Amino acid sequence: MTEMKTKPTRPLKASEVARWDRQTDVAVVGFGGAGACAAIEAHDAGARVTIFELASAAGGSTALSSAEIYMGGGEGTRVQQACGWHDSDRDMFEYLKASAGPQADDAKIRAYVAGSAEHFNWLVDKGVPFKDSEYRQRAMMALTDDCLLFTGSEKAWPFAQLAKPCPRGHNLEVEGDNGGPLFMQIMSDNVSQRGIEVEFNARALTLIVDDHSGRVCGLVVRIDMQEHFVKVNKGVVLCNGGFAMNEPMLKKYAPGLMRCSMPIGNPGDTGTGILMGLGVGAAAINMHEGFVSLPFYPPASLTYGVLINAQGQRFINEDCYHGRVGAYVLRQQGDRVYLVFGYEDYGDYEQNSYLGASVAGTGETLAELETELGLPAGQLQHSVEFYNRHAEQGQDPLFHKASEWLKPICAPYVALDCTPGRGAYFPYFTLGGLDTLPSGEVLTADGDIIAGLYAAGRTACGIPRRGEGYASGLSVGDATFSGRMAGLAAAGAGGTGDAEPKPANPDYEHDQQRKP
Image 1 (tube, rainbow, N blue to C red):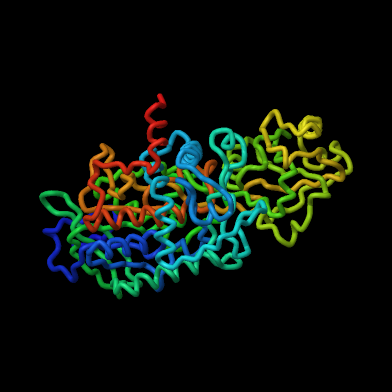
Image 2 (tube, rainbow, N blue to C red):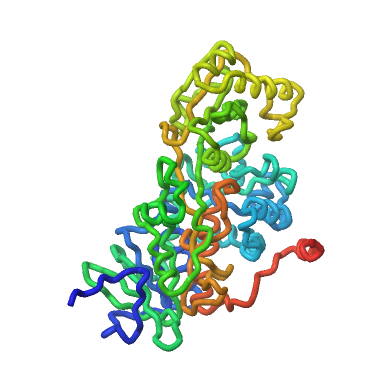
């Protein structure tokens, strides 16, 4: 008889375990930002914690990021206040809710907003450095050691009309794109100082459930080519990433993302945690959604241009966040998307851009450029002439680009090829995952809690729900915050499944109750 291979979707019953190789109170799967924060909080709440990490070192996808962290609300973080910004729970909630659209989880957003300022203080207490300064340029990230910057579409239509714009991206005090490695080094030091047990090169294979209650009570882990059976007294916290590196899962759940050019994440982002949850009856939601970027700035001057589809028409306000632009690009019909602008705004594109798009055409007249791009006769001319006529008045009646980015596009003209699959850089990662409460407890499709199972970071479906509403810092912010909540709940220090964290501002609560 052939021995069945251990699969994440095929949990074991406790009665099938011949021996327990080790025992812990809380088992954390994954040592990225979510896993580190979960382990720290669970330990500090009195639980014995063991981290199982697939790789040979800590880091996960958090270490590969710039580690901007989206925080604010209340009266603002220390940095926001020092830079003269006064945030509010209402504005942060309304922005995040609008960003997530119909998929928004109001309870999670409220919990995140209410706990955001405290989360900033918690990170500072753990040694994460934030400089009391602001980076005022339009950029994907601050390459200086300045902290505060706008990292989403807060200043762009339609969001600026729904909530007062406020910068909430908090960059670590480190120059260059080095925030992720620094953040994970600090979190790793915190784990080490607490004596939390860590097993590297340990692949979590599947969950173990109690025969009678169905409670998750253990974990099967492969270490040194041997399967180890781990008895877990309090809870398993799944923090092992999304599924951007799992092509069959992408084809099944999010085929649209496969038009993009580069998955963002670590090799362990294969969806194993999601599959393990599915194996014990968890619901996986929002699985079709992902972050998609068209990083067309820097240079910021390219924002003066217009994005044109195969019909020669605009389709978005170009001053919004690059992730929103990327999501809209994927929606366009036809086989071409171009960024058209005047040569005077070309700037240092070839030296400092992340986009990597080739020049598709140039022209002394719009008709010449239109012909070179193979667009329908007259369409590009009409689109740009209509845009220019209103831009002279500081208006954009079609897409409401902010006046600071409005000016007529003048000859000579340049068009960059931003078509997916034609060379431009289109990075992506997944936003779907296990359905959880704000406390991290994993839910079935009926909304019942799966006892003993928790999830955080991109293994769970968290605050960011749509690529078109994403803001940089939401993943690391959500991962670290949700990791903390899951760690506390798994240790028995929070998360009863029937309590929703309340906003800190009573006026905000009152306003919410008045809404229909």
